[in-house]
Image (cartoon, rainbow, N blue to C red; front, top):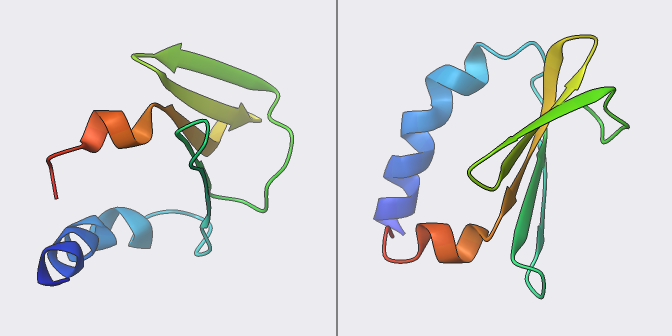
Length: 78
């Protein structure tokens, strides 16, 4: 648990610099897909995919990230 706490603490500067102070997280274990929304989940008007990470945009601002194969990608890093 201490390791998780340390990792969360490392992300705090990024969270504090975000316009929205709420984050919605959903993980589909069966599909191994992690969804992170920086605004109340909504439809994006644009998206880009790189290395199984989809970045979602609305009005040119990042509103969410989808990580395909999340468990596989981060296995062994915790």
